[in-house]
Image 1 (cartoon, rainbow, N blue to C red):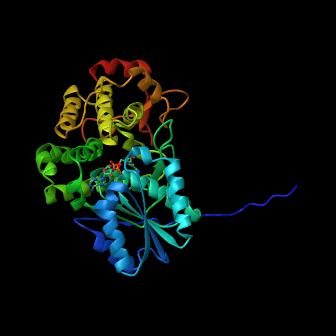
Image 2 (image 1 turned 90 degrees about the vertical axis):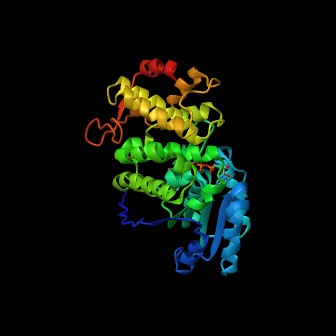
Image 3 (image 1 turned 120 degrees about the horizontal axis):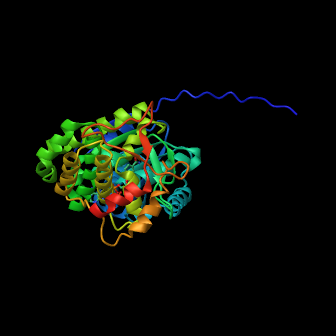
Length: 370
Ligand SMILES: NC(=O)c1ccc[n+]([C@@H]2O[C@H](COP(=O)([O-])OP(=O)(O)OC[C@H]3O[C@@H](n4cnc5c(N)ncnc54)[C@H](O)[C@@H]3O)[C@@H](O)[C@H]2O)c1
């Protein structure tokens, strides 16, 4: 018998820029001319059918007009497309179009597109570069930054995926103008989560400026996009692979993801997160981590953002409790939650420990208030 050790130590610089502004398609093309995608010689613009008509088609034309070899691949919009099957279809389309390792994926769209296209890029030809061009508030607030890519499975959302960092992220705040109002609200759920989790001043700003945000006033939108990035980055830079601190980004998502799946995706991601934030604020106040008044402040801001703060009647409560056990934080069969500490901070339960076990009975106790 013999053995030898394969010495492989990685030094990786995954740093990248986030550009925030109105209408950034031409900036993207200029950056590509300046070498943003390195040696990539072909570009796969991955998008959904709605965003294709609104933005991705124009980006494709701009790329071609500027001499880039680019093709567009799109799929039906919505969470239902965020599957392994869609990933396979995108990959097969890319292979048929002749894409090989010397390509770059440009994801143009909301979180479904950036999550799926980032995952495609991570495994296509064992990994090709990708760029996110985010067109929803939710993608700007959360999905397109941070390097998590994934697809859903019938069991639960985001179970299969990769940590994969983009070459650059563009947050086009002008694109929010064509978003249906409920999609603006959906993005605000992650925004409110960030404020509750890490920034009391931002929470006050959201309370003061909610109307300006809905009116899509440029300065308010830019502040929302920038502050979301700053908060998420403070967390992600300290814990890229979710070994500790990054768990706090789960606020509202333990219940939220379960609600989203049990609703059969009738609720948008942000709407489900809003229900989750409410449930988890109620749990936090039961456990003494915030006051009842603070929990109500969260709930009231969610309502003002046009978000639900109750479980829809069609949600089967038993199925919901069962679904909580598919959460990735579950350990030894016990539910675990992260908790807000007042408003603007998170509970820490030990060195690098941000979640704690919670009895199912306590979760059942707050259901009537939901
Ligand atoms: N990777 C992460 O860290 C992370 C974080 C949060 C959420 N997510 C994921 O993000 C997804 C939700 O994001 P989303 O709400 O952006 O989803 P989405 O991509 O489905 O976009 C929402 C809808 O808006 C449409 N749309 C997109 N841009 C538009 C525009 N500018 N104008 C008009 N319509 C437009 C889309 O076609 C779609 O119908 C979920 O799958 C969630 O799991 C990922």
